[in-house]
Image (cartoon, rainbow, N blue to C red; front, side, top):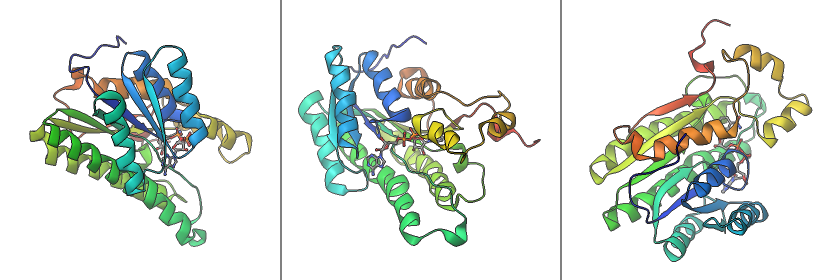
Length: 259
Ligand code: NAD
C-alpha cells in the first residue's frame, strides 16, 4: 500500500499501547511513512525502546510512560505531542487488556481492570484528543481498537466482550458528536492476531491455534501488519467519507455462522 497522506503534515500520531504487539507495529509503520509518533505505554522500557529504535533510524518518535486510565497521564502524553510535534492530529486508541475466565470465578478487580483500560482509557484519550483538536480548529482522526469480540460473543470473556462492545458504541457516538468539527472516528475489530501474547497463549496450551485456524474462513491468524494497514487507511484521506464505522480484520470470522 502506498504510504501517502494528503492532509496537513503538522501534528503527531499518538499510539496508546505502542510499546508492543499491534500498537508497536502501527507506530513503526506510521513513523516509517513519515509521521511523527508518540508511543504512549504503561511499560516504560518498551515505549522507550520503540521510540529509540525509530529515532536511531531517522524517524520522528517520542515515548511517554503512563496509563491511559489516569487522567493526568493522558493530559501529559498529549502535552508531549505539543512540545515535540506541534500537537496531535491522530489518536490510535489501541491499549487494551484481555482475559479469559469463567464469569462465576471472575474477580471484581479483574473486571475493573478491563473497564479501566478498555473503556475509561479510550474515553480519556478520545476526550483529550477531541478537546485539543476542536480548540485548535483542526481536523483529525481517532481510531479505536475494538475486537471481533466486541461484535460477536465468546464464553468466559464477559469483561473483554462487554468492554469491547462498549468501544464499538463509543466509536459511533463520538463520530456523530465530532463530525461537524472535522474529526472522523472509526474502529478496528481484529480477529486473532499473531503477537508475542497470542504466541505465548498457544505455547502454554491456552489457545488452540489449529481449532482457531479451522474456524477462520481464511484459515489463519492475522498479522499486526494487516491491522496496521487498515489503521493507515482509516487515518488517511483515502477514507475521508468514512466515519462511525467499525471495520473487521478477522479473516472472515465474524461473518461465519456455519462452523
Ligand atoms: P499487547 O498486550 O501485545 O499490547 C498492549 C500494550 O498496551 C502493551 O504494550 C501494554 O503495556 C499496553 N498497556 C496495557 N495497559 C495500558 C495502560 N493502562 N496504559 C497504557 N498502555 C497500556 O496487546 P495486542 O495483542 O497488541 O493488542 C492491542 C489491542 O488490540 C488491544 O486493544 C487488544 O484488545 C486488541 N486486539 C488484539 C487481538 C489479538 O489477537 N492480539 C485481537 C483483537 C483485538
